[in-house]
Length: 247
Image (cartoon, rainbow, N blue to C red):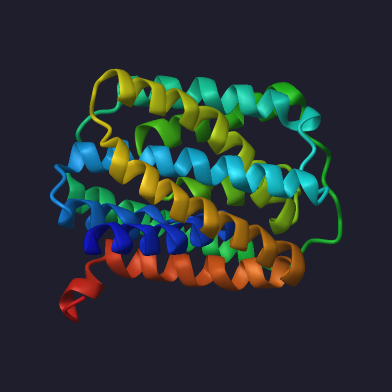
């Protein structure tokens, strides 16, 4: 019972962080492994919670008028295609090297997100260029997974010119769409532990509800603060600094 309480609690934190920024799965996976799951099962089980979290967040963002689906259908389709291709073409990479590369990517994202806004609007990209960009982003999500929320936020902010609140709304919708396919694949493979996944999903959904509420009430400034903290912690983990100080 204690482990289920812990899973529910970490689900709340993960849902909140994922909805405002990303990286919540770095909290969840160690807890699921602590509960005795093999890492592949933990990865699969976590997808149930991610799906429910994004269903909750998407519905709340839509209710508050922050999500309009029609303008982002083409990039959603592109991301789903990319994610499916990425998941099938994933290859093994040395984790130590990969973590360093990912940490550098996260730092770059943080710098770009916090940069002063350019008042001059550039020429809008064509839908085909946007389509290709989001195939690449979706491929990253399917191929790498870690930090995909950060990548989506950065791309939506930089390419689509969404503020971070609207970017979060679109991100939750796109991730919801392609996570549905991931859950189906993992379910058919028998890797999901449904009881743990549903407890986690309840926590993630509550966290997502609170995250949307915070995003709507506090606006882009609050999102930037949470996003910055999440990226910094992720970088400390990826570069092994947390391990050096015993965390």
